[in-house]
Image 1 (spheres, rainbow, N blue to C red):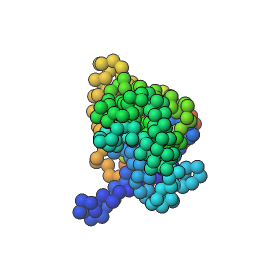
Image 2 (cartoon, helix red, strand yellow; image 1 turned 90 degrees about the horizontal axis):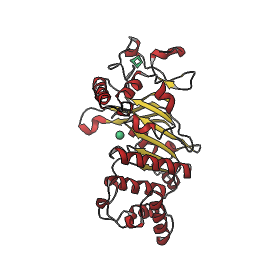
Image 3 (cartoon, rainbow, N blue to C red; image 1 turned 135 degrees about the vertical axis):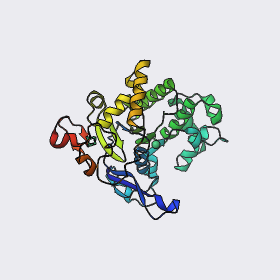
Image 4 (tube, helix red, strand yellow; image 1 turned 45 degrees about the vertical axis):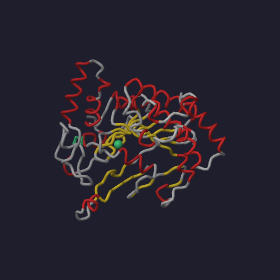
Length: 325
Ligand code: SF4
Ligand code: MG
């Protein structure tokens, strides 16, 4: 993904004069074969829109998305079946994407049918195979979505993606609605499936703790901009951007004790959930209203993403010219 910008025409729908809202602002990132890139940030940071642009569910304003050397933003409105098959999605709420009146195996067979794969009996076999690989038994095939737990429904959603043998799966808050132990089961399942298939994940989540366990690298978005990216261990060991530091401090996963959880909640509260005061698409740092190290330059100049000598990238004026903060 190079210089991806997605701007919505926000005003028209509201009956105002034409105005645009920049959801994603010149974001560049790579997902390599067989790896997981975690994409984290608070709500409204642009992470879902980035995923949806890759899935071709939203129109791209500018920038390129290369897949196997083809810029998929130039494909026009009809996305080729081969790309739609190669890039699959698992979203937060499988109930919303499963037909309540159909048994769950039909979620898989219908998707195979839509992609022109196999005859009826082959599709049934493939569905059974995909169910087995995600840890669901044959008995689950003929259940209705409402008869399954949240974790089982998410396994169905993964089976549906898996049956198409994708190269990349965009997981958008795929475990966020699940309880902690189910979350780790699904994360382990995704990791196992990646081992056996070599597929890549773009793992989108607001929670750094969840992302940590599955991601090889993590990219942090804020206000539609990429503010830091680094290998996972390095990001946690030496976060550079003040926003990343705040995110880690506020993550319950980094505070296992109850007392520290309370401290984390207070830290999260202090740093605020959103930054409504800062308009999008204007110069300046998207964290300037909340940063305790803010400088004059942060209000007027957008910090460029810079490569540091340890291989991480950070967009913050504290690191200008390779300086260490
Ligand atoms: Fe803080 Fe300025 Fe760095 Fe933004 S650019 S994170 S406001 S120091
Ligand atoms: Mg989202």
